[in-house]
Amino acid sequence: MKIQPPVRVLIVDDSAVVRQILAEILDRDAGIEVVGTAADPLIAREKIKQFNPDVITLDVEMPRMDGLAFLANLMRLRPTPVVMISSLTERGADTTFQALALGAIDFVSKPRLDVARSLQAYADEIIGKVKAAAQVRVRPLARPVTRHGLEPVAPTPGPAPRFRTTDRLIAIGASAGGTEALRVVLEGMPADAPAVVLTQHLPASFSAAFAERLDRHSAMSVREASDGEAILPGHAYLPRGGQHLRVIRDGARWRCRLDDTDPVNRHKPAVDVLFRSVAQNAGGNAVGALLTGMGDDGARGLLDMKEAGAATLVQDEHTSVVWGMPGAACKLGAVQEVLPLDRIAQRLLTLSGQGH
Image 1 (tube, one colour):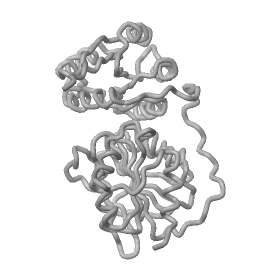
Image 2: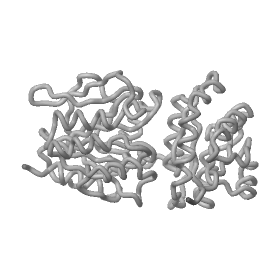
Image 3: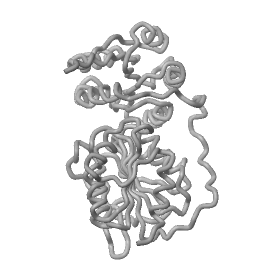
Image 4: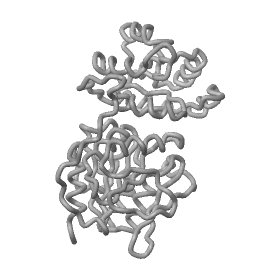
């Protein structure tokens, strides 16, 4: 059996305390080697040349530097998997989503207070995400992106087919890489698309900023779901971070149900919770899609949807940042179609417009 060499990691953070704690956490794992640390991008640039790391952890909100510009240059000149260590603030959330758009693989959140203790609590998550990032093939940034050009204007929807949307429901789940994948899918949806329910693995304080970001990029109305609200065509619903989203039936219509029950597959919200509720309450009137993500959350729920008569599809391996969740669904036999990201929106619309 071939022994894998350890994942070589460079830690970039302006805080000496954070650099020390991250190094201690990562060095505990025999599969990881911290090859260096850097307090600013100039030092980081030299250490990248010196050590050629497999993964970089990066705090993009550092004083005296523009972390997004550094990340954009890195992805253009020397594409390397990056895991962000992001602060749990509104500004931190927006910066994180911009960094994901630039090509960062994933992020770990850190509260502003008592960083030392909080990072230790996230040790397993940090180790897991660094190891997963090392398996990702990072593609060079294809388009030049400036700090002020990260938010493209939502496209003007062209002529779109009219859908019988009152009895159709689209359910989508995603994790690592999903913030950008969901943006691409929702950009392809017309204003009168069937209702969409979403679950993306996010910390509680990031969900509002994420819903706002998706809303800016889609002709649909994208919002955080409220408990009990009706699910309507032309709208997409995202659970508040830290709560599961379920679909319940109320007579002839569906409603959102948010609950604070235990994590499922270590996640809250969990894709399996959403998909199983859709299988139970929408059955063959639903379409399910599982996008890029680490682990297997959503795979069993997608199988439940398929067995209930729903059409099912997943994002293909080539366009996924991490093909964990879609791959797990394929292995379970839950998938009817495997498609590249840029074809998923149109296929969801086509499947949603089919009668029985």
